[in-house]
Length: 293
Image 1 (cartoon, rainbow, N blue to C red):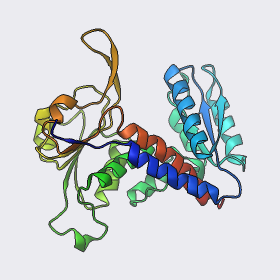
Image 2: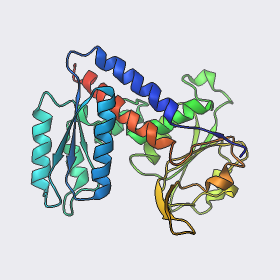
Image 3: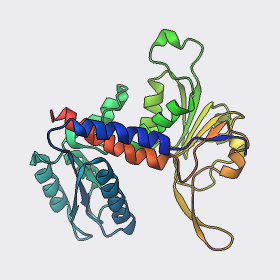
Image 4: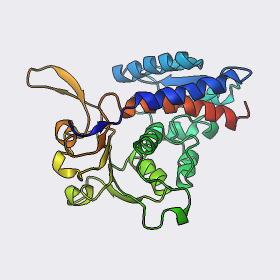
């Protein structure tokens, strides 16, 4: 293996320490409320992981279980109650939601200052302005991993003349691809965003000093797609079966190939996921500050 592993745990631990320090100075611990409007096992598992992460740093956690029979009015009604509850610092709608429920409409109903998932249009607008305050958690995780890798990121235009790096983001979702591209663009990276309509992925990806892959398709990016010496951030989390029929978790990048070409690469699991969870906790603190707590 030639590439250095860009692991998420050290970054996540640092963020959690900052969260603990912030909570220690607050009169009342912050509270995260999660709405579970589904019977999806993955969403329920994620809720348990959220609760554990919150308990580790001292954030109170409430799970509002509405079940798979929840309708639009029920979900939005509960959101309204949580918006009005001064004891609730942050609100997150766990995905997926029950059939027939418009998740985007529900997310728009969340008070922007309590939207710790960073999906309200007001918070996505902050990302356009280069702010990480209540930005989508995974996009923030990508940004933090990019900083930790040591790639060239600049705060001022005159610092970066002729020095900006090439970045290729594979995937253009609202919560990962687009906001990741915008946050890195604000640091004077030159951004290429690839997606299902891209004709020749390799032509773009092999120019990138930093390659971010967030599609949700196992094995999409192979070693031949990676520029020698590039930093690879693999956001994908896919469950597949190996040759022996055992289930394992892999990313969107063929790790065994890319690790021989890249200079640094995030493992899956152990990379982006840990930092994403920490960013949710950080967003709870940011939400508290926006609310004057």
